[in-house]
Length: 133
Image 1 (spheres, rainbow, N blue to C red):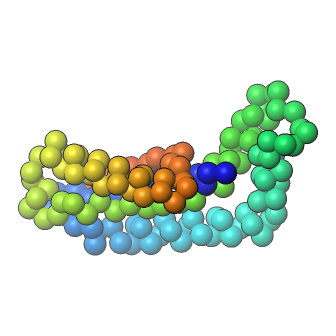
Image 2: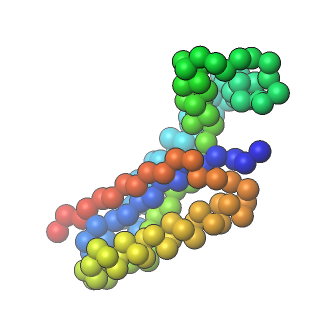
């Protein structure tokens, strides 16, 4: 079974650098670990495994149970945080087209790396923080 991943991409603003996002990354990682630990201790992991097992005899005909399964599947996702590093300082003035291309290359490389580990990105989020001059 492929392990699902929630890929969160952090992008800094003008004259920024990846170090500006260290605290944001640390807090997101901490929150993700706490959430995973909390679910494991409450026994939800076993419940989710039972619901998602294709050999399960439970019926999935109702839309509410399908929605519930989707929500629980999302809860099981591994969190991967990517801080874009390919443009910093004055290079942020290279233009949105150039830097978007650089960021897309980093995202593509990360997705390929995850796929090589048998993982698949199921949820994708971007957090862009602007710098105050």
